Length: 457
Ligand code: MN
Ligand code: MN
Image 1 (tube, rainbow, N blue to C red):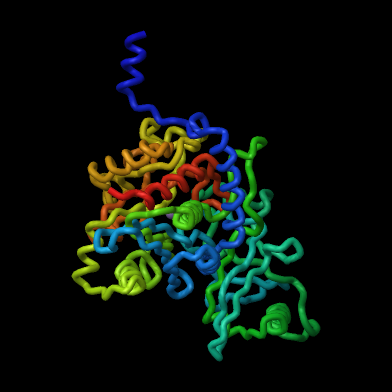
Image 2: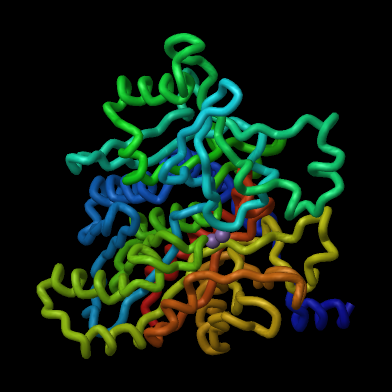
């Protein structure tokens, strides 16, 4: 008996969140998940996410709301303490893997019309074949006017699809190849129609029929598609998964589960001492380059605006004095241990579904290359914060050493000397068209982010 107590005192055991949640918290977790599903349905692209976040922030009177190029947005709530003492930052990303249309997408072949695509981010190509797809995006016309489209989400909308080969003919073309090579990117074309215009003598009559339809409905011509960003995403709504409805299944949960949690946390946080900042960025899935990615000087830019908004006059020296005094969470997901592929995980250090928000000290790949690798002091601070506020948390490493890996935006924020660690839920089927999250993890992520914003030490 004594040894049992000793073990309990000395061993670290992660806790299954549901076991330690009160009845009230369990109910709240399901309500938060309903809210989350509405966010997922309205925000399938980075632009849609920015619109949603902007609207929610304004409705809730968040003092500082600023979008940048419709793809990045920052929210801030000034704290009781002066901003010069440092901020609390949560940075998440709102882009997700998908198929983008090429700039000259339309063609016809064998009496059918198609859009050509170029995939965005890390996808497993076979997951995108033979499933209903929706088209979201922005078209900029020659006169400078813009048009936003969203087709395939309403029940009466048509959907689109990438064809797959019938099994009867797939033996050599697909089965004998490596999975990573069996589907060619240039064959991932979207079927968009099969009715012609005119008669057999009319040249390009299927393509012409599509362009006529697009012109009638949207007033666009083929050249308009060159100045467009059109994203093809899985059609349909986020769903509860399981007889017990314990899980959420949806496209884009990496990283909208963190974006949603950060949004809800900043809306709900009260009496924050430090200035709370939630930053939502684009382009994480393709390396964070570009003006709307985390490698751009977004943090300085927004910080200047935030300082101005509270009547200050930002200077370079002030910015570089604030940031090293600041604490940040890189809000991104981890891969949960998958029972069917358990051998790819090092089980003692793998994140598990349902075990609360996951604090990931380092990401990167073999030998911690390209990792932020948060310091012990900061992990200690987060651990203390979560423990003392009953946030169920775990630690996680993405797969066995040398098995693979991945990165987040943490290292780009760390460049400013900000203390930052990766922290978000672990999900299953990551980067697939139907990612799986646990409602208890969503709740603990939200709760963890909220106490982070409210922390004062
Ligand atoms: Mn991510
Ligand atoms: Mn990702």
